[in-house]
Image (cartoon, rainbow, N blue to C red; front, side, top):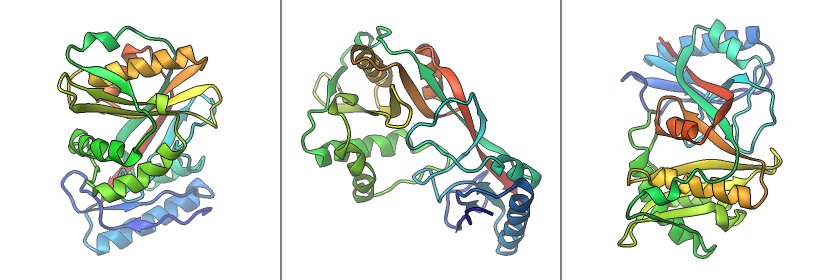
Length: 266
C-alpha cells in the first residue's frame, strides 16, 4: 500500500445505516488494496457498523471520490487523484458505486442566460472584505447543500478557514454574487484560473436560492472567460443526476472525467 488511508467513524449515514468511511490514499496494487479493505470491513463490522463508504475523508468537506474513467486530459486543481488500482481494489473487496460524479469542459462565451432571470443581477466581487463575502456565502451553502448526501453543516469559522486561502489568491472577477431587487444576496459563485490545466477556468462552486441565479452566474463566468482569452471552462466535480449536471449540458459541457464514491453494506 502506497498511502495508508485513515478510518473515519463519525460520518453521515449511508442508506440510513451506521456508516464508517475509509479515507483517501493510493494502493500499491489492486490485490493488496482489496485485502486491506476486506480486513477493514471485518473490523468495522465487529464494531457494530452496518455500512462502509470510501474513499472519503470524513465528509464532503474533505477529499473524496476516486476516478472511474478519464479521456486522458490534464488534471485540474483540487481534483481527486488516488492511485490507478484503487477502483479495482474496491471492486474486488465487494464495494459498489454509491454515488457518481463527473467533470465536464465547455467552450467560453455567453449563452445569453444572464439577462433571463427577472429581478436578479450578477456582480463581481470587489476584492475587499473577504470575511464579509464568505459570511454571506456560508448561509447560502449550508442551505443549498443541506439535502446533499454526506454533506455535514459546519460553523462559519471553519467555512472561513477553508475558503479564505482560496480567496486570498483569487481573481475577484471570477468571484460572483447574485442579488435580488432588494439587494439581498441570493447566489454565489467561486471560479478561478487553473495553474495545472493551462488555459482553463475552473467553475468550482455555485449556489443560488432563486431559480436561475446559478445559471446567470455561470453565464457571466463563461462570458468573461471568452473575453479574457481562456480556452475552456471546467465544470468541476458535479454529482450525477442533480441540477449542476443538467446546467452543464445547457452550456454544451462534454464530460472528460468520471468519479465514484464506493459503498459496501456489512
